[in-house]
Amino acid sequence: MERENLELVIELRHELHKHPELSNHEVWTKQHLISFLKSYTNLEVVDKGKWFYAIYRVGHDRENIAFRADFDALPIEETIVIPHASQAPGVSHKCGHDGHSASLAGLALEIDQKGADKNIFFLFQHAEETGDGAVECVSFIKENNIQEIYAYHNMSGMAHNTVNVINGTAHCASKGMTIFMEGTPAHASQPEDGINPAFAMAKIIDTIDVFTSVEHNKGMVLCTVVHVNIGEKAFGVSASKGELLLTIRALYEEDLDKLQHNLEELTLSLAKQYGLKASFSYNDVFPETVNHKESSDKIRVACKNKGINLIEMKQAFRASEDFGHYLKETKGAIFYIGNGEEYPPIHTVEYDFRDDVIETAVELFKGLIEIS
Image (cartoon, rainbow, N blue to C red):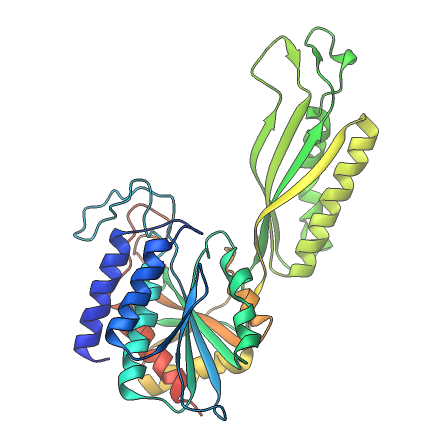
């Protein structure tokens, strides 16, 4: 990567870090990235509202390949002392999306200056953390006849600047599930006069182990209780309303669908038994992210060609990633660049994206473009 380009995008990364914005509120971030590309490249920029993409075109008869970067931040206070510290109270780039976007901008600089024999699409996506972004952007694939799409994530716990890849499922499917149950209130001295949802909710929680057991599922399944709220803090009143928040997660979407169905069926059955009203809502819905082997193999070849150390991952990440939406529509893969085995984990207060990862990402992206 050209030194001048690397210095430019490191400076860009620091500016993005100073001005983090939460999912679906990335107004400054999006505009700053667009301004950067318009200032330093001749690429066509297509503004789609919350997100955008840039295009390097060589001809309609050439392959269309895309690269995606996310640019939202997290609701975590910046507590470490760094020159480019967040200026937004309670918000910071503790997942490294500032680095992902800077890397894609770096690729844009290199391709604009040096050229390529393919049509290259640079997709800058909002709201990855909540799972909203890719759902809104996925139409980009068919509209532009994208034949392959790639992305990367920086990852702690992996050797510094190594590329890590896996065939098949790379990230689990997951969603936030809220179960609402409503009965009728009564005096705490006469609970029989009302209908309390606590007993039904307790039975739901008690059955989770059965639903997630290995013998009942194709792969790993998790159901995590994240919040329980039943009744009010009033010792004279028997509870009448409750909500149970669960994060349900599975290696395979078919297992996730089965878990959701089982939880809904059990809830409705208990509601009927106890005379309760029941309803459900869902948030932060992520698909399984499944790498195409052909694309993962190209990552392996690009690493060899670029002299980048490659490590084969032995298992998928439990955490989810909305990049899976794109991989349902076209070939592609996501890979991971190591921050270091002992480097602070993402989503923690001690974390900051490592600037030297940018060059590794850009060179590997370029290597993928060069593969015929």
